[in-house]
Image 1 (cartoon, protein in one colour):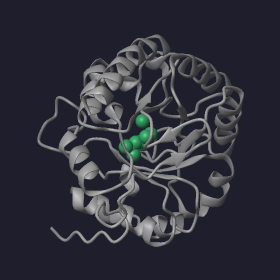
Image 2: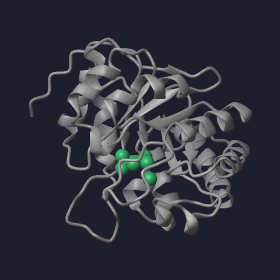
Image 3: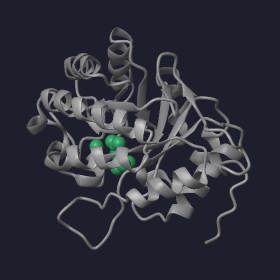
Image 4: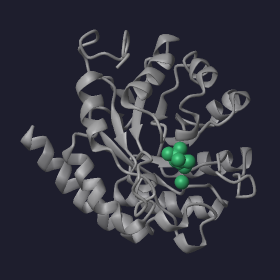
Length: 272
Ligand code: PEP
Ligand code: MN
C-alpha cells in the first residue's frame, strides 16, 4: 500500500480536525447533514430544510450540479438551485453543503456553500482537488466507488497539500459483487480512516444502500463504527424525486431516525 500521508496522518498532527461552522462543529460533536439529493424547487428545499432542522440536523444538503450516470437524467438547477438552497439554509439557520463537479464552477459555488462536496465520481479529479486546496472553505471528499482506502486518503492529501486544512472524509459505499444494495457500505474504511488520520469521517448510508428501508440500521452501525456524522437524503415526497427516488427518506421518517441516532451517539460517547 503506497500511503504517505504528510498532512492527514494522525502521528504528524496529533489533533482532531474540527470544522467550525459557527453553531455546529464537525469532528467535535456528532453532526447529521440532511436534505434532498437534488434541489428541485424553492418549495421542496424550504420544506425539507424546515423539517430536517426541526428533527435536529446540523447541515442542509442538496445538489444543484448533479453528476448523473446518464446524460439524459436531470442534471440539476445550477445557480438557481444554489440560490434556493442558500435561502432555505439562511431561513432555518443551517449551513449548506453542495457538490462541485466542474473546476470552472468553484468560485460561484463557494459564494453560496459552507461546505463544498466532491462526489464519488470526482474523487480522482486531481486538478479539482488541487484547486479546492487553494481555498479555506471546508471540503467534504467522498470516497470513489472503486477507490481503495489508500487512494481515498491520498486524494484528501491533494487538498491538504495545497493549503486547505478543512477536509472532511465521507464513506458512501463501494462497488462489489453484491447487487442487492446499490453499493456496499464499507465500515472498515471508517475505522481505518479514523485510526490513520485526524480528519472527521462522515458516513452516507443513502448512496451506499440505495434503498430507504436500510438507512436506519446502517446509520446506527456507522455511529458504532466511530463515524463523526451522517449525510442522509430526505425529500418531502420521495417517489416524485427527480433523482435517487428509492433511497430518500420522508421528513417524518427522518425525524424518527434522528431520535435513534441521538440515543446511539449518546451511548457511543459514554462507551468511549
Ligand atoms: C450525492 O451526494 O448527491 C451524490 C451524487 O453522491 P455520490 O457522489 O456519493 O454518488
Ligand atoms: Mn443522490
